[in-house]
Amino acid sequence: MHRPILLTLLAILGCQAVPTARDASRPPNIVLVFTDDQGYGDLSCYGHPTIHTPHVDALAAGGTKLTQFYVASPVCSPSRAALLTGCYPKRVGMHKHVIFPGYDYGLHTDEVTLADLLRGEGYATGCFGKWHLGHRPGLLPTDQGFDVFAGVPYSNDMAQIHRGPDTKYKYRLPWMEQSEVVEWEPDQRLLTRRATEAAVDFIDAHAEEPFFVYVPHSMPHIPLYASAEFEGNSPRGLYGDVIEEIDWSVGQLAAALERHGLTNDTLFLFTTDNGPWLPFKRDGGSAGLLRGGKGSNWEGGQRVPCVVSWPGTIPAGQVVRDVATTMDILPTVAAFAGAPLPGEILDGHDVSDLLTGAPGATSPTEHFLYYTSKGDLAGIRRGPWKLLLAKGELFHLEHDVSEQWNVAGQNAELVAELGTLAREMDATITAEARPTRAVEAMAFDPTKPAQAVGQSPF
Image (cartoon, rainbow, N blue to C red; front, side, top):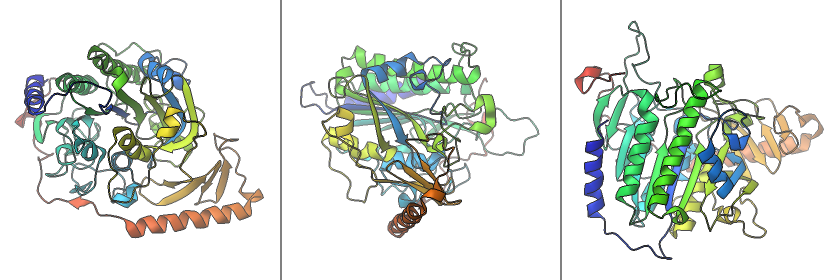
């Protein structure tokens, strides 16, 4: 499991930090769990009848559940770029689908990530799980504001372990610690557990100082794997097993906070990168009432579950029905942490008033643009109205969350107005777009034989 290597690294980093006594002026710790391809309807607190998620449900009961929360892309890499930068993927050049093992680019290190922002305020920062924003030298989490990284650099399907002997696919999946490969083709049944254990170790090592723990789980992206402790337990089948193990992970993180007396000092967020991968049927999850899933611009592709907890600051049992997005997380966390915003243009907004239940608080998001999985403008939402440009379809989402009734014919002027607005906004973002970073050298050779570094027993 290579935990001794990670524990040694955490101990060294912990010794470098100067512990501070807990007091009322301490900024909140941040724990952010970001799952992969989990649907809007795949938590019991969002209505799933058989998947059991008591730990996420407890966060929701003790905090806030958002019902109109959006990601900026219906696929992985662009969505992650938006989360960490507070920008539409096109603004930071990360809008053209996902990064594959042979690609030479990633999120530019000139971008100020959430980790950069918090490290600048004295936070210890760690990323544990799936990165997927570039894996060449200079593009890894430790180049983007994280003190510690343990996990995989891209999606778990970009591996050899689950392919037949006649495959022509040449790439392999590494488990990395910092910028080094410590194992090729890790046992994917243990990915959720390993990321969780590394995150808990980090909390233990940095309990006396503010910390940011980012846990972007590899699951439930296909192919699905659960550890022996969870496999076969859920009535929902393997997909349910995977979600329930992620819920266990949330419970482990919450328990670590409680053990150190940090629950009331921690902003805990749980959300996902896009909707469920529906072509995989039983392995693909559910968007509940929402139409469509991953890769689409229907609500099921981009409206996702989000639960936020901070006891004593965020009201218990609150439901926020206003529009918010993953791009809001950076400016909101900055507000809670007392950190200055980056100088670059952001597309997200501070929604701290919404989360804390401030009287009269409303969403600062007046417009939300939908982009396709390849980064093309797809539509716009303003208030309750959603326009999809390709076919000129208009939906009133407050009346019709499942997008069954196209009312464009009765609202021609509104269709024209929203279409013009969407194209103007997209043109501005395109004109202001910043580049990605391309790197010729390889951090590691993803075609290297698996046994060259370490053979998985899986």
